[in-house]
Length: 97
Image (cartoon, rainbow, N blue to C red; front, side, top):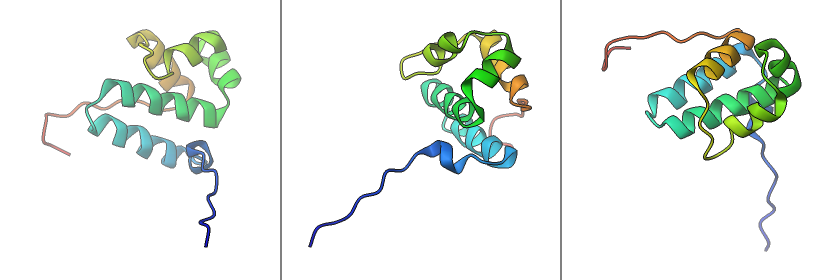
């Protein structure tokens, strides 16, 4: 018996602002900058990269490059994209939820 595989795309699971915020928050908790960057890119793709680029005043191509594996977005780009997505970062002491 063959196992049937289905294509899964993370962007299909990021429909609501709450889903998107939870995904980015989980990525931040992993304390892995590259994973955080990729997660932010996933959320931007789910929203629509062209739309996010326009709101963030960044080119679509630069967003794809910055949030691809191995990309290294500047803090300015990260903040602009978060703002364009209607998200913000909150800071707390380590170990405190």
